[in-house]
Image (cartoon, rainbow, N blue to C red):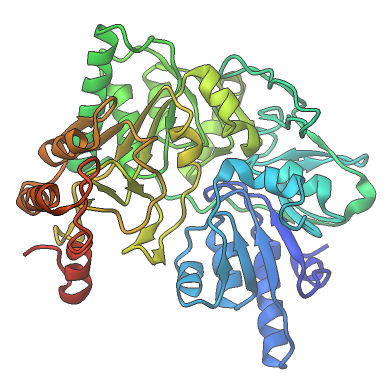
Length: 488
């Protein structure tokens, strides 16, 4: 049926589980039609809002359209759309920011409501209810299994190139849980399709539209410098015998993460590498072109239209190198720890004691969310948090006396990197951490402020283990809120 006809089947107060992970593999036609229907109902004075669960962020055709239609009552676990972000920060939409690796588990254990309806983008569906997903795994199997009703968007944009690339395995729940049978990046544990009762499928909508992914762009100088610090440090650690050559990498999303992968592809000293990550980004194709990719496991494949054509033209070869899993597996602590993943994620701000804020501007306004960074940071072999040392044309220092919101505590952070340098925090006491972060990561124009805070705290705070002068801990943040700059 048409997307408009399918949208008519959605009820007010429905709990909807959609496919999609970081702008990959999300439904496009039905959510857009649903948003238009919500606007018509609201114009007539009728109530219409839904709860929206996903894998991670979805494109503007889903999150954006529904947010502008004021049709989202509750959103979980992650988003990145400017209109939805505005609605959340205005208090119009309830938002639960959650670790991406735990979302499916929360639904399956009924800690939060199970979806009543699943809207999932797929590559194909058979008459007997076999479903082959499109460019993301996400939480699709969980939503398809638990929802009483299913709407499928069969997207032809990838053709059959994604059929066979997925692994639909999910671990059993306690007390029946067993070890996850993954000991290598490309190990398979389940089928490449998801079986559902075909009687639950209430609509099938045909589409032919790509994900809203911007084409890969050359990293800027700051990102390149950060990447250079990381690769230099990894080489040093290998020479010391502290990192085996064969460990896989996890790379977060964004310019800095893309720069690291690009630098790995172009570094003549870099040996072929593997990825055990969430998002297989377009920069991974740089590794392929350089013949430096052993294999890549993730839960989403983000491709611009150009990269999608490259993928489709090399489908047979890429199916040997790529595997897309359900995010409950791609982000599972057991597998991350077993494989010894080297983790690289982006921070909004870090403080001098090693705490990281990944999600909230000035401590109160959501940006996107914590995502899966903690799933990896807490369980990896070696973990990096990366950020430019300043933001907003140098008015904001990304290194502060105390973060305005805590996503990752000093207990789980290992290495901080900015374009200024790198601080290895492993084994350091809090004061030594502070000195290392200020000396190596802070921008020179903010170092004096940070050192003054540390020295004042050492002389004035009652406890000397983590000396924090509470009366001055947020002076830089308060100065920014009142004057528009953290500069003195």
